[in-house]
Length: 306
Length: 286
Image 1 (cartoon, chains in turn orange, cyan):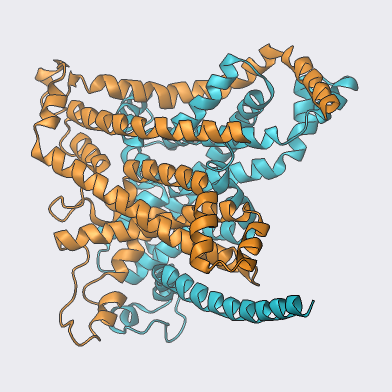
Image 2 (cartoon, rainbow over the protein chains, first blue to last red):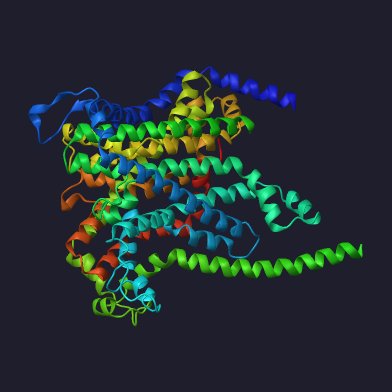
């Protein structure tokens, strides 16, 4: 073992000698990333300290913290921030539960597992624009399948306005986003489940542990690091995501389904207030950086364990 | 001995019953999950009149009038072609850049390479809306607004961090011995990478290709800002325009949606293994 390790080390040192080649191979990708990702990100942060409104060209210039003060003293901003958190947490929890149930079912040794797995991946794979169209057809108040079915029930006598009624629309976007997100949870949790040694379950079963006990004392602890990583990632993605809501409701009705990313998009491209929009998205960034620091720490810890 | 046999007999009986239950729950869940999608396909094959009046799930007979309408009488076919051009160019560009960078951070050790690895991880998580506004300004300065290269550049750059990260993990699993052997035989390191490592990395490259293609195919936000006229729209933006233009023509809209999801579905059918591998790569491997 130690001999092999020493050998490996020798190979590695021989490869170290050609560092310039390594730098050169990084150049093309770095140029793209610096120009098209990093520069806009930094520029976006800088714009948040500017007065920059396309409708008021004369008032351009340095604004200091004015945009941030405006955001923090705006009840619209706080309302949207609150809903963004509520929405994100609901989506992550729902996606995790559905993903976990499906992962446990698919972890059983049954025939046709691949087919079921493929069918469960459909929501994740289809374009968000298509998903939004699908849902609005299903939710249609005149001829939609869901309302037709619901009206068969004795106590439902008029169509439910899934996307036209503010409170209902909020639940609808949470539901449809969770639908789009659970396959990722399913796949990562399934990978996690498959890494748990089967002997653990066998031993527990012979000792007479019930399903609930096995789940509580084997599955949950064994999955803890995978769970942390996939819920954190999902939190970040959902918090950032604009398409899942925007394509279905455009943030409406009456801005009830606005999240921070939609507020940014709307402020920049409809109200043309670019400075203020940049401030909102910078606040979004700050929230995410806090979550990210947590994520990077978990991933680093995981990498060290391997 | 007999106690053990009894235990296993009891277990296999229970196992069979559990398997049956698994099937029932799985079929039920998969059906519920796919209802929006199945309904889209069913509606797209109904005649217009049937789709708007009958609430039957299945079409009474297969009709292709909606597909005909979408492909012949709207410019949705242009959108489909645009999406293909963009997705293919982005996929090729992304592979070229990411195999090199991924190989570099997998094989070379040093502070720069370590920092680069973490940077790739963090960059994947930044909010897209923050760069949307400056990106628009850059593209306007480059005179690329309303031209396909604008989204090609944007998609390549935004897909690179994930691709590099994924390929780095893949190259890590390839032993150094292969390059060592190649170098002993007189290959340069770039030569060993190109002729030995890359060919056996095809599964990793395929995963990146499929992911990049799907991401480029599905993207809406950036395209909605950079592509504004009919001739250059990709399918996602085109579909949104379709929604606004033909608000009441649901069957035609369903036909357009069905066409839009075809390429991704084909990937799901023929390359599920790579998709699953890629989905796991970002989170499980450190």
